[in-house]
Length: 158
Image 1 (cartoon, rainbow, N blue to C red):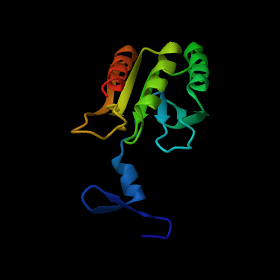
Image 2: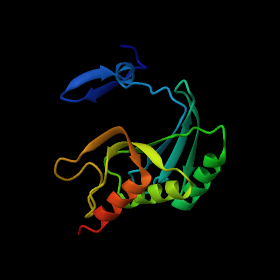
Image 3: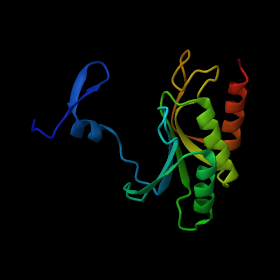
Image 4: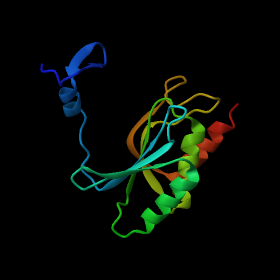
């Protein structure tokens, strides 16, 4: 291994190089928008990245709040050449409030469906990935109105 390679711990103690880890993650080759929601306090909460049809990044926009996210997504939705595929990536540790804000901004912008990756935050001050046996979605198509309803119900559980 040369000096530029780093080691990554994967799963149950397997050690692989970053190059091997990258090779394990499939590259999705679709013209798409991908919304990521920050999990750390103090980070810019929303980032939207566009991917070209060959899976390469075409650029990224970060938004401080749901109003900025809605503004960017509204303009994107009106662009005939913009991708129509919209992916939500929700990492463990994401709050229900942030996911719900992103869903509302996306719906208000004219999007109706996303491919959801991650756990849906259960509410009760628990973040995504917490709780008893959380269901993890892997690029599952889900209608935004249904997702908003689930999140709203989860927010009222406690």
